[in-house]
Length: 197
Image 1 (cartoon, rainbow, N blue to C red):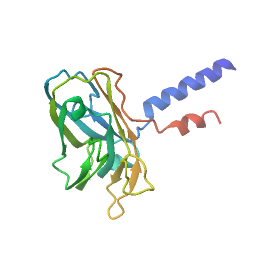
Image 2 (image 1 turned 30 degrees about the vertical axis):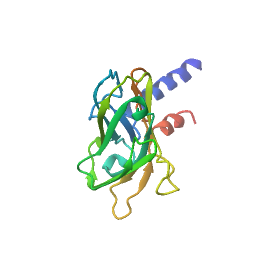
Image 3 (image 1 turned 135 degrees about the vertical axis):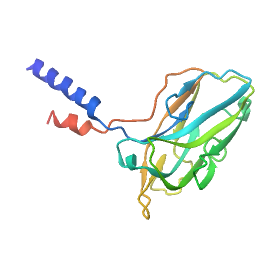
Image 4 (image 1 turned 90 degrees about the horizontal axis):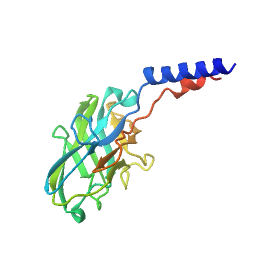
């Protein structure tokens, strides 16, 4: 009996990891294609990092027309970092600032559907006059969401005129220490759970 249960569990886990879709997320990356979320940043020197939407197999798979979020933990002027948040040039609306500790959030919108697997939202550029140790940057909800029913980091879908909002996970990025993580989760738990019912 135990062997059959263990075999069923192994099979279920294999199916979950090979056939699952990932939920969409917003993350901070050190490569514009969303492939790197940890970096060593010696100072003094210029820096660039990127905030991207990673489209998964959920409702955002067909593309997005916007996003709302903030980034916590980004180095700032108190750390000797001077930066500029530059929205994707393809956007037609950019309100707020994703890394400003006073503004605490941003909204960005595009005039057409952005359907690439990784959608650049902002490029953060600047100059680091000092080194920060073990800094974690985390994507979270806008401190003052435009819709109180969506107190989360969110993406806006390409379903005009409705423009459906969906909550998404926020990823983490690490400067000068830490383990790289990306905010994705598997959406196939119901198929695994069904094997044991």
